[in-house]
Length: 148
Ligand code: DQA
Image (cartoon, rainbow, N blue to C red):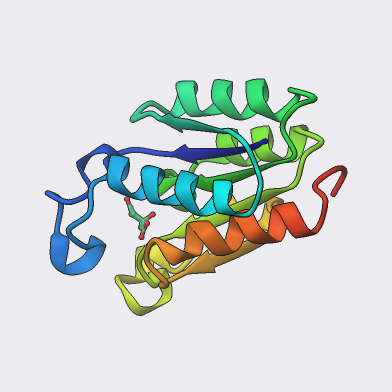
C-alpha cells in the first residue's frame, strides 16, 4: 500500500490559484490516482491531508511505521520550505518517501526554490502537475518499497 500525504492549502485545489495549480480538486486527483493504481493491480491507498504541521508529522510517523505501507508520497506544501520537524519525521521512518510539488518551485519566487524536506526524501518531482503523484507512486511500486 502507498500513502499519499498532502499538506496545507492543498485542500483548496481547484479553487486556489487555478492558473498555477489547475482546476481539479484534491478529491479529483486522489480518485484519479486510485484509479490508475488499481489498473496496475494494486489495491488500496491511504490518503491524508492536513493544514497542520503537527498532524503531518504524526501522519508520516504513523504510516511510515505501518508494515503494510511500502512508501509515502508527500506534497508538504509550504512546509517544504521551512519545516525541519517534517524533514526529521521523513528521516525517521524506514519507508522511502518521494516529495511532489504540482508547480515547478524553481520557476517561482526565490523562497520556494529551497525545499528543506526534499533532502530527506528518496527523490523529488516538481512542475508536472498531478502526474507527479503518479510518477512517484509508480516509482515506489516498481522499486518494491522497503528500506531506503
Ligand atoms: C506546492 C508548492 C509550494 O511552494 C506551495 O506553498 C504549495 C503548493 C506545489 O504543489 O506546487 O502550497 O507544494
